[in-house]
Length: 367
Image (cartoon, rainbow, N blue to C red; front, side, top):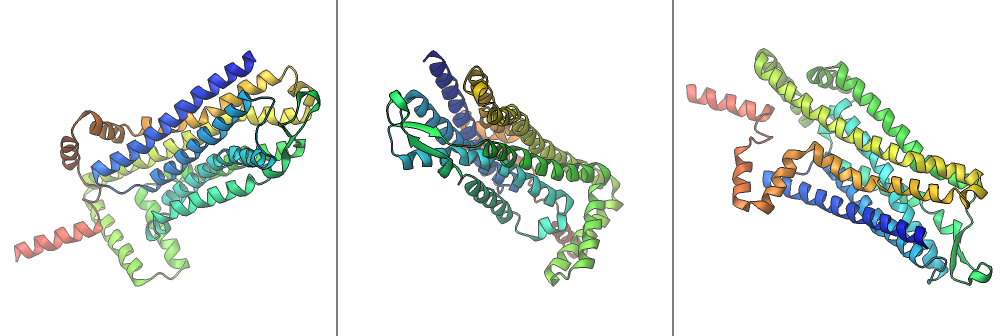
């Protein structure tokens, strides 16, 4: 009873920190973008999907598990509820790594295939990636409806929940929910890193434009946009100082985004590594798992649960400016926060279109 109580306390603390951290991150993204009057970025949109998955993990996975532990060894609900609870517990566990894959694919498309990235709907595409991740998570969670059941065990009485899971499913579960998404994310980040550190931004964009224009026929509007971009880049090259400053600033933001998402994926991998390894070993050694190894398995499972607490703080540490801006609405007045955001340069103040407009105004003023 003492061990169960200590486990419940630790899980309750993790649940509280996960809820607070993810709600705080949602507030930071929403308020920060509102003050700066900018649209939510694709990465932020996928990060919000991850926040929602972590909140579901805290409320459904940890919350229901705490209730099961407090009433152990009894389960005061029907067999259908038992199966649904186990399904909902596993759903966010699958969704989180699948969303990591979605983030890595989105970053790969943005950095390695910029023409496709900017000619497509860059705000609708992350939602497609996120919804696809949730769809796969829902499908992969379906076996939980069949491997769990409510049954009576001897003198303990009825209303006891148990599992009829086989070792093969435990092995497959670890591969699908942890190893496979990690390998896919690692592949895309390897491609991203080789692209970022080998070629400068303008060469990446020019090579990608040439290859895509040879392979496919684009519309007139897209051709005009590409022509404007190339003219703008050529002018920037002539002004070496301006071009170098812009490329340096772009590289900083690009590498910062890659580091942020890469660290989130690495944390997800290493925090769940011990639990997935123990999960496979548990399938082969039943006696050890239900004997002396039960305490070790419980502690390692709690280590994996920390992933829901870590993700929001990684984003906050990498985006201190937007965090300070959002916190300024709490400790300062909204007017002062808006004034400070107006002093900052707009992200759309430099671009091919604005450059041509400026050139046209100057020529008209000379005539």
